[in-house]
Length: 446
Image (cartoon, rainbow, N blue to C red):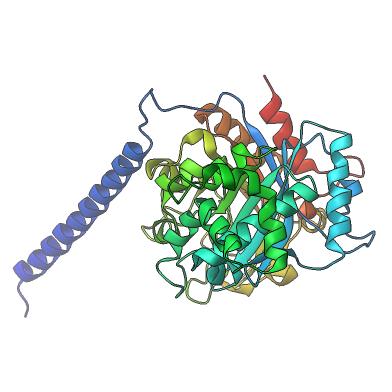
């Protein structure tokens, strides 16, 4: 017969083990909180933005009444409108189709209704795409920069947005993060040298001549003058922005932030798509939380907008140049069981809309009888109905994020994108662009 002392000893060991584990969890949570608090501790001398921008992305679409056309956009909603996308081919900046040129002109016509709005052209490329080939050589960077300046000047754009996802990422050349900086600091003198020796083609020569006066004045200067200098000395002041990652691993791999900060006017933080359905993590989660939840484990604790914005500043980007990204799209999950419908509920795969919904589609889902929950920890809502679970942003959550940006002194809000907002007022039959309008209302509120 086993002695009672044995059972007492086992119970004591289990109790001590449980207490030890609990203490470890508490220490880990305390260390995590202290680390986050330290990251958010900013000295008074750090410059905060006194006014905020509303930066809106617009993806040009085919001429179809079911798709958002330039004429449908309310130009009073955005301080900056970023139109996409152009691409890089053979080291030149080119439109994706010839029909895009007409759409660019129609978009620029919006400035007749709001002359203060800045319109930028976005150049979008994935890893190992046209950017990767172009930035790797001086010749490629120079051809690209001067073709870009020619295009911006011809179509009267106010600047350029680089949407490279992502330098040095996913098996790409580790040197691309440095090439990206060189792209922003391309040598004007080198381009003139190539023109003088007849290396450039006739088309390249024509493009280079846009800056020929500047080149001749700078031939005796050192190489490596910043693109920012070229732009400031040109007839027009072009803005430079970059769409940048919000995942910590990508940030540290892809960007030399202190050098980038010297060249760009602002960065558009893609603080969304943090999580979506994955077989490796088959649980529901919100893709655009502002804050983390207390129960988040170490793997996902940093996947939120506040952390990402603070991390970018800690790495060297001025707070006033950081635009917090807000999505107008949603992500859906197919629940394992309708009875398990909270955050971190088991999921079998993507839900309705093949895992991604526009805001009008979210409205239809809600009108069908879905239950709506606003998570007070992350400051974003989710909804469920049957086997479908949807993480989205609504007017309340985007207003809260906008107020937080104002309170913290960040540069503003980036909306991605106008196309997925309810631009046709299908949600309530009266309000167009409800999410963007809520952001603008909060940002401009005194």
